[in-house]
Image: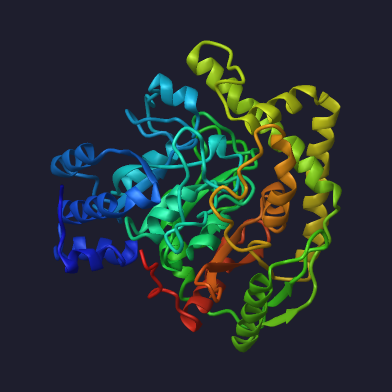
Length: 477
């Protein structure tokens, strides 16, 4: 087992930008930093269960052979084990059938190839719920991931493995994806920065298209890291059908822009269920902070048709069915109820019962919602909300009942009332770690911008980070 000094352990708590500079200045080598990260994983992941596929020998060999000289040359990195393939590595999507088959990817996805060209050292792949369906990370195939701030609680999902790894000090940044909040949810629960980019900002090629609900980016500790990672990974791939407007300048340059007088709407209520008091406190404190920075915050928020949740679930169930059909093709046989978790099976059966008109209605509702919310952004620059409706649930609390798995969806909806609608509209949104509950659990707040305006989110997030820094927070783990 690799061991590390206290000084090397401290380097792991720097953000990725700082780690890259140390390597560029030859104050630490990529191998030394990778060995420190490996030692950290070996020391704490037995309790957290974030890194389910370890490629430690591979990454050390790749470092010795010479990593690409990109802006993050030699910085340790983890990839979520869902729809982001890395050549020669397991790609199981939290599914027991793929795990049993020992399925491995034949090539990098285009986004992973961009991370590789940026110089990152891939340490492994992180835990995820089966096909990313749930906002917790407790797949039957690999067991639950736990929150480093309290091991009895969830780190969220579906990027829970990545978020827990960053929060636990294993790496400074990790890949994540977001189809209904799956970057923002675990970022809120683990005290991290989590930006969901605009639809079409990141290529999903070569196997998926950009009309999907999901987008990809990272979970990290600093706003400058989320900006820098956007710079190295954004942009279309060959044949992409949805392409976000190109940025006017580098996202790192946006850190130096200091906007004033923005019109920011806010909400601290959920019409469908009560919010946890700490979530209310978090958003009110953030509103006061934004006012102190010279912005105008008002109690105004767009209203969303309650039927939107049902129509979103139509699309979510069809997405689950497409995932299982894809695995069937990979394995060369039809999946059965024994190959997937009960909730996944229930959703695939529901999807099979939908008519083409029902699915088209769900898509049309998404178009209507996008245009309805567009009217709000004609008069506002940003929207401020809690990221979540509650604190991180305890491990097992949201695990669907085996005999009636769909019955747990109400509790899920109450936890995530503010994130899925912006996957439907394709707007960028960011969760920031601006609050901590009295029990020590992180509580995030969400800022949402108009389509294509990641620049504005980064500008304001940088202002908030400077005014209320969170860099020194660490879990007792």
